Structure formats: structure tokens, C-alpha cells
Amino acid sequence: MIWVIATVTAKEGHVQDVFNELCAVAPTVREEDGCHAYHPCLDSERAADKDNDPRPDTITVVEAWESHDALQAHRETEHMQRFRDNAGDWIADGDIRILSPAG
Image (tube, rainbow, N blue to C red; front, side, top):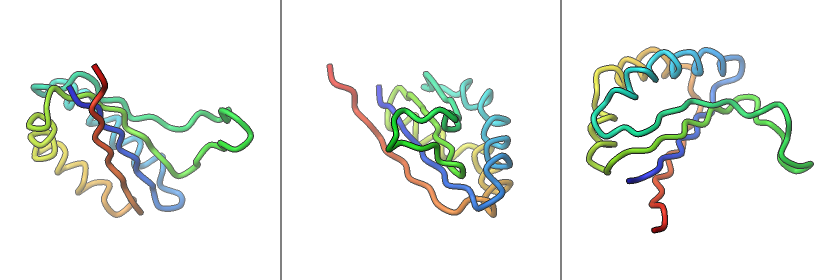
């Protein structure tokens, strides 16, 4: 299994638009073969510590996939293309980290 942490930075004033689009597609993603978890999240308004303020324009998607192949298939689905078409103009930046858990 692999874990994915996808960080999406929305253009100013559009974080809720992007978040809504991700939440709309999430149930379909969770039904994909090889998907173990897919959760769009906003930073909590409570900072973890004094140096960790919430990021107002950031969405983090926490994902777990059976394999790299399942993740690649996910990226190529029609519903993810539709997400990119719907939300693409509202996204300023993105970063995807693929993690291999120990053990």
C-alpha cells in the first residue's frame, strides 16, 4: 500500500470552491479499485503550536492506494478529469507526495 498527501493551494477567494469540488468527487473516488482512503481536508482553525498557523488557501487530500498502478488509474479517470476541468482555474499550485509506509 502507498499513502498520498496531495496539497492543493487555491487562488485567493477560491478555497471553498476547490474543496467543494473535491468533496463532490470523493465518494466516486472511494469506489475505485485499489482505493483504501480518500479524504479532502482543510486545516483546523486551531494551530498545532505557535509556529503552525492554519493555511487559509490550502486543501490537503489524504489518500491510501493499493499500488502505484491503482493511483495512476485514478489520475486517468473521467471524474478526476472533470474535477480538473471544473476547478483548474481556481488552483494556484499543487504538490503530491507518495509515501511508502514502513513495515
